[in-house]
Image (cartoon, rainbow, N blue to C red; front, side, top):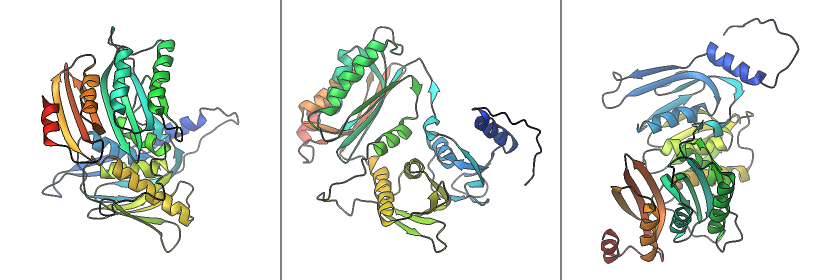
Length: 376
């Protein structure tokens, strides 16, 4: 620990907080060590950095984006740790919304949230095709009767971002009408921007903001399919202990850290292995304060894990990309009474690489004849 003496005047600038944060980062640069010797079947990554709200999410996000599977993790704000250690807590807080966002004029990003129903993706795709918008990339999640999507689109004629304000307003209006459908109890939302967002990060934020974790009292859940989440306060009352038991899969740590960050909890200690245990508290230093708050944490973490669970039959499509392809494919699903529970749509070098998870709209297993018809 050291002290730095500075001669300053008493004038104050709105940018002073940003300058302090930049100075702090220069004085305390992060240290990353890649170790392939300590473990025979894994690479150990040690990260030491100044601790701030959202830093754990940023580190996990980078590792996840590199397609690295985090099998074990030890996280501590006190220093040390086999995979990651976070340094002393600082007073600087950055907006998690800014993670992965950069200006771009290559495409227009459209974020959609609304009520899920059979044929929704088909209707959205049809509207975009009608408006002469080409879908470059898209990811769609559904959970607990809600749907969220992040789509990157361009002008059909120019292949560039859509910039005309009137066209953007028209696109938002028509898509909102589709998302609302006949459900008046829950709203729909369409946001258009020219930023490059981290798609999965935004989907978590959007569904959390849309309260997809809320369930009706009469809803019957299969307890065997639900993740096991518990929250108890530590003996000294400074921390709350969150224990998560779930079927392991890639991005599980990313999904849970996203939600804890959005709920403004800080992970001070964690041991991620066969069962994940995390010591958390609010960014103001307080633990979980009430039973109602405890239940909300449990519900939100369950939802974070369940959002990525891909229910239904997995269908993969690789073909030459063309305008209206997504609309045509999803129309075939709708005509065969299938609903899309999750979708990943990408285009690369003139090729469309799409993955859809579908199930029968009535809840029954997908018939083999239907699968053959779809493939044809």
